[in-house]
Amino acid sequence: MSPHPALSHDRMDTVAKALEEVLSLALPQGCITVGVYEAAKSLNVDPDNVVLCILATDDDDVKDVALQIHFTLIQAFCCENDISILRVNNTRRLAEILGGGTQGGEPMDLHCVLVTSPHSSSWKDPALSKVNRFCRESRCMDQWVPIINLPER
Image (cartoon, rainbow, N blue to C red; front, top):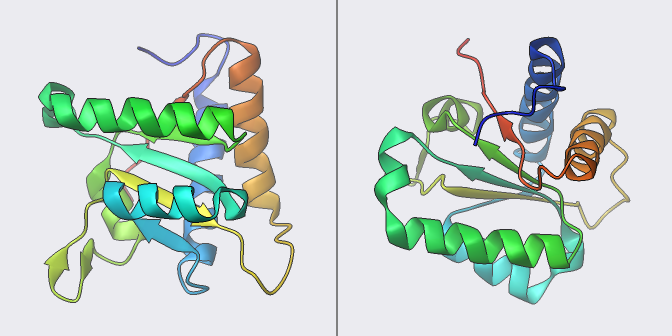
């Protein structure tokens, strides 16, 4: 599944930068849920609080049937609950953005990352709006889970 031809590289770069900004802002606020199992629990308990779902893979993950089944179920749930969803194809860069990819010395499961809205306020982040608009426009072109390449820094 390749990115839609109507989505220019410049636009993809803009969305990738906006996604990095969203993650960088959400992390210190405690608005990130990492891991397939943790994400599924969070989606089950409070789906209305989830503002973005990111599914991340590397080339090796394509052969992981169990992971692909998890992704299919998470995607279906997100579509059903009107949660924007993206696929990211650079887990190493995602780990860098999220502070190195370890939590308490253990490697994080970065295959699924949820961004939730802080309870204190209704989050009106322009970068999040840009990412959500991109997801909406992609759905209109029948690309339900757009793929973003996070460029190396």
